[in-house]
Length: 99
Image (tube, rainbow, N blue to C red; front, side, top):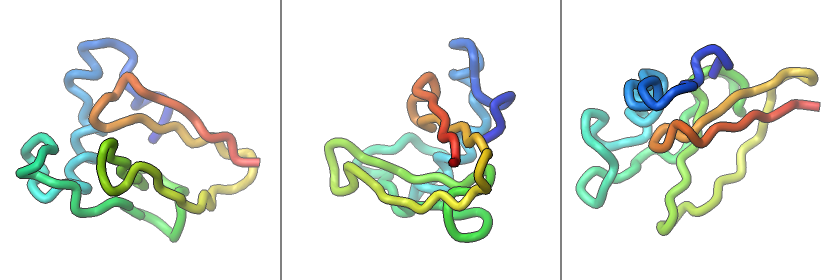
C-alpha cells in the first residue's frame, strides 16, 4: 500500500479502510471477522502481475494454524519501497526495500 494510506493513530487503525479491503479478499465472508466460522479461504491475493508488486497484493499468515509462514516472490523494480501492514492488527507495519 502507499505509505500515506498506513494508519498512524488508534482512530485511523480502528477505521482502516485498506485493512477492511485486504482482509475481505482473504475471508469466506468479507463482512465478518476471521474465526472458526469465517475461515481464510485465499492465502495469497495477487492483484497485478505475478508477485508482490502492486497495492492490494497480500498474503495471509495464521498462527496457530496451517499457514504459519508464506513464501512469495517480490517482483517490484529495484529501488522500490513496498509498505505493508497486518489487516487484522493495523499497527503492525513494515516495509520491503527492493534491491
